[in-house]
Length: 458
Image (cartoon, rainbow, N blue to C red):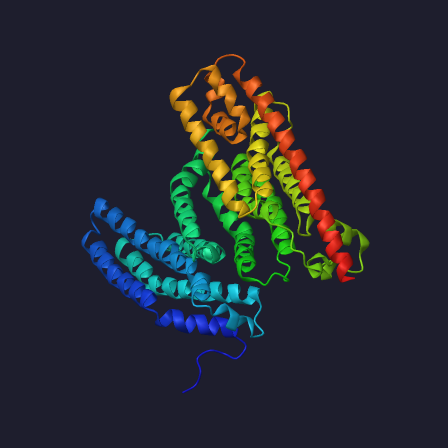
């Protein structure tokens, strides 16, 4: 019997595809989907002359397709790398010529091919619904392909988050993040368009998927690679370059489509994981991690730029974060002329740098301390809005800029008594400035450690 897979196909893709197609999860998902589709076709035939029934069958069809492509497969992706970590098989894979990038990309490719297979099985039902219900075939196929593209993006996000899933804290964070994403993000993006009384155009989302989709996939996979790669492998520069590219593309799309606010929100959400991980990542004392990337060798300008923005460490992470924020603000069209927006930006900066300074000062998991400080700010925000709204007590939120930023977003400063916003801004500004001084001191100490490590190696 001949092997159905060609020799040029990556061995990790062959391995994962064989295991995935034989797994109980995929077989069950495929069987349930086909049975439900047969039922959907019967409902479509019976309700061909009934508009209400036809709409119900259409909603049922897309609910099933979306559940399989946008929920079922991404949930399997979340467990893709964590299962290898639990079974202690990553060490065996590291002994092969496969790099961490090829392992993560192979996991995603196998899952995406399963999505392609599921989509292929849905095409006959789409055609049958066209002949029975007289639906727009081109529109139906286009929606199905866009759903497949969205599935590919979610699969990459699942693979990127997978290294966190083997820990209890990681599972809790993933659960909370999923709840927030499914409830808050749709309202956030629609709301950004409803400020003008309209929703975001479909063409804008198609452009986002086509232009930003590949970059999002690469960024998410790089996050997963960072969780399984050996300490000596450089993953920092690739992640940061992708974040810069995402900020640029999101900004250009906002200008072209006239959706600057939506692109600002989308770009900020997409680059936030890379920015936060760069700022909280402790510089590894491995001299080879600070060598110039291959593509910069022979070019002095590129080598200097890589040293400033792409090398591991707090100093370069701060420069990189400043660059990304500057790109997003530039394309947003903001010109620093609105005092209220300036106060909001100050609160936002403080909400980032103060918890970061505390997290970097304390020994232990910096990301856990950062989240704890953010949670404390949220608790103070709830307390102030429930018990002390429209009082001078709101001024105290300046001592924790996270709470001040949330109060600013909720509009509390516009309804509070006179003088609250300026006082809170002064307090938040002082705390932010002190935090920046602390971070600058930590960056200087870190650079000394790196220089000592590199001198010892040489």
